[in-house]
Length: 122
Image (cartoon, rainbow, N blue to C red):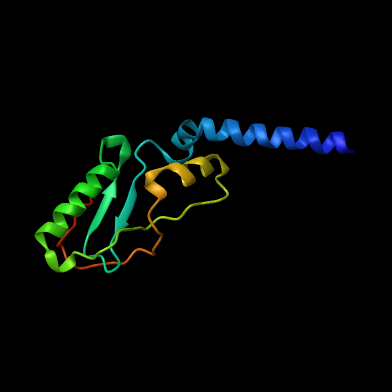
């Protein structure tokens, strides 16, 4: 009985390790090539959509957010939030959820805004 639990644990651990190693390929088939991630401030004064496969990455967003705050000093205390959730059922992304900059921002439900100020997204 003990041997059966050990074998099962090893298989589960191997599946987790391999799936997280090949998560890029798995996501290509499950989410497509041009996956995008949306970020915004609390009241949607600033919004940005990253598309890492097209070069619109986190660093570009940070530069645009810094520029936005320089142009609008009244918004100097703004904080960015991600508007997409982590899905714990997608176990192949667990390593990315912990280590990738894309997921390091706090989650907030997306707020719709009528303003065009700070709309750096698509």
